[in-house]
Amino acid sequence: MNAEYFRTMFGYTAWAWSRVLDQVDRVPQDDYVAARWRDYGSMRSILVHALASEVRYLSVWQGEPIGARPDEATVPTAAELRKAWANQEQALGAFLAGLTDQDCLRVIKQVSARNGQETVTPLWLLMTQAVNHHTQHRSEIALMVTQLGHSPGDLDVSRYYRERTG
Image (tube, rainbow, N blue to C red):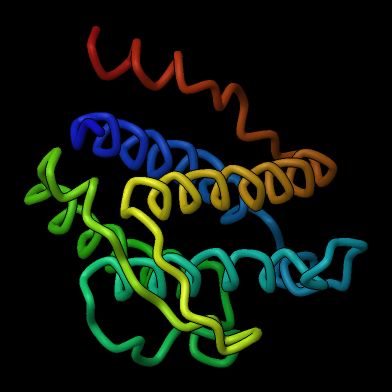
């Protein structure tokens, strides 16, 4: 596995989220918290879930206890969520900066909160899951903001790559 691949994919993920969150910033608070037909209930709920998941992912990857994760009470507005997200991206960036190809092969043991069973999974797969998880929820939010008249535009990874490499 290639550590540079994951640095690229998480760079893309941050870039795409930034484009989506720029449009979320334009949404009135009432629309931000309004109940919608999505699994998590509201735009805010989905965003808080995505951020809290990334906090959990990074803790697991670093072998640290999972501490307090953001929730709707700690990040009630889009502006507060964005600030918490920036802090999380900084922590993830530090982790990725030190990531090696060999690290990607490291096996991580976890105990499932759902069924109490231990799982053994390579880091590269867990990181792939995180990228995929972000894609799912980012697309849900992109749809919501687009329906409210605030499209984030093209979120293709190829666009990110071209902008990054010139």
